Image (cartoon, rainbow, N blue to C red; front, side, top):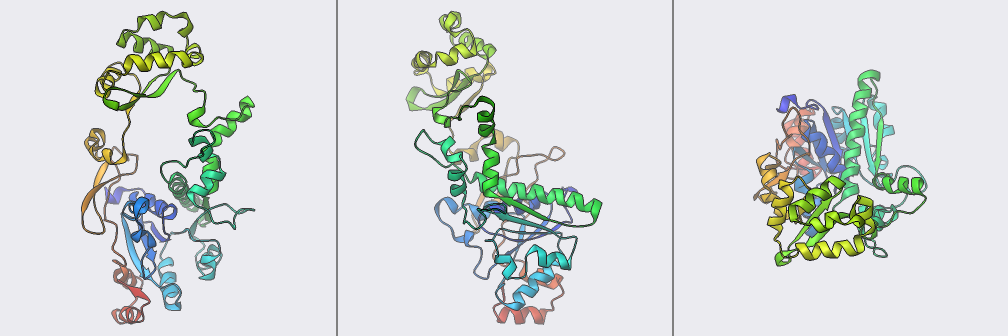
Length: 393
């Protein structure tokens, strides 16, 4: 499938770290592009993160090559420029001004190659905030997402790096759009993606709710749900399961399946809106009646009747998910320390196939010599760069 992937033949040089920029490169790499990760001599700091950051590097840097250059030295910048001369796309996510100081900003590079597409991933798009240092949690707090996720008075960040990952995805979408436009105009362009604006896009539905109703959206745990049965239930053995019946048809199926004829016949529970208004007394009845059933039993009944349900799953449980394993949603991956694991693929298919892992997350500088040789450096020149600690690998 490699040669048939849509971006086969496209070369990307990325100056990225952490999550946002590497996600952009991962998407393009998974879709066939040759993505070359330019790392400092000491390596991307993401390689060394602990705790919640320990999975960043192996996840977001598969299907890439690594070259290690000291960009603070003229010889390192020259090597980067020679690589960029062969590129379709440059991607970066450093603080504003960093790439300009290195002479690797869009204004400088576009003079050398008008076809170059340059993707910048930042905290904010240009404007009054663009000097600020942003993190996913920062923009979740200032962008309304933490307010909507937590209980009233208790803002809480979402449980994954939603803005970093989606910001990188939008960077990739912008690069794809720029490639399509270049086919028509012959010219590249600068693409910008930002954490804050991404977060605002995520909460836009709540902004529009206010625009339509004139009423502020309540935090998700404290909201008035649009659906009567749409909640987590604690059942036999303390297990938890999410159960839903979001239409009058589903309510009838639910009552039939569990023999709740009295509830189905109750005129106070006739419509979904009636049941929403009755949640204060209806939900305790449902919780009591379902409390002695096992989560497995409830899952089987809901699945048989086509009703929405979900076990409360921890991320590590997904390695054993039967659907993911049956559909090839997890691919073998070798971690930097040599251990074998599996990793989720892009959540899409192309002609019925999931774009897979073609190459493992690279070792630091693994492709340095190969790439410099392709850029025209002789073996003697490469050895000289290595002895001067301009490169490693």
